[in-house]
Length: 334
Image (cartoon, rainbow, N blue to C red; front, side, top):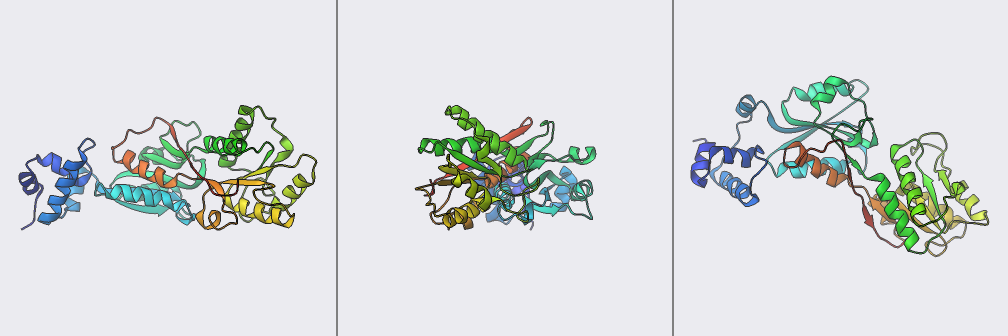
């Protein structure tokens, strides 16, 4: 015989509503031990959710839909999806992801996701940027992840870029570096905010902001791996000057990799002559450099976990943009 919610409620000595909340994520306020006890009992009795019936009754299925603007293809932004899925599974929810494409724009993709009657929909991007969703699509999305609306009014989770740059620059300065330079990411919101944090840290230490020691890592107005690199030329010019930097903050770990190579060609030692620090913590790069790279780890997994709690009503939805802090990963490049 099929086991019902009533059977589990009777065996557990609780209400059917409590059982439904424990098994289907419908209760935002429940003790963890109660939820775990009910879930264990449901497994023991062989309970299987009737998803079509539940969808008709509740108006939604135990699904979180993620509309991804490039996020699946990013080597480390996939941690957003992993974090979200891991947290959602604790509430007996599943995550499905579909992507925006040239053939299907954001509005059409979100409308397609709505047909599956998910509990909630999130919109995630590959890198931190502004997004402008059409009105109907905007209403359907419960949370923006790794992106924000231009008026900052929409609920969104983004990396705390400015604070991360302040933290890593402050770290360099507290380790005795007094002439830091910055190889930035042109055309990206992350680059703009990271530069602001770099400047803020210098002012906080009563150090001058030397404009000649702040420069784009690539030519053109937008950072990409395909753009022409300026790293070798900039570092060569800096080290040839009378006021050479004793530290270089890089816009990301890929730029740091280039900076290592440039310094080695010029005979400079890391960190003895020039310290290097960066952003992202792309482990395949940062941990394998010699010496290993000190960097700020992007909070993508934490953003995914927090997104799941927000979308399922377990955590209060932010009013506007919520910045999630990076984590400093100390290695031996400073």
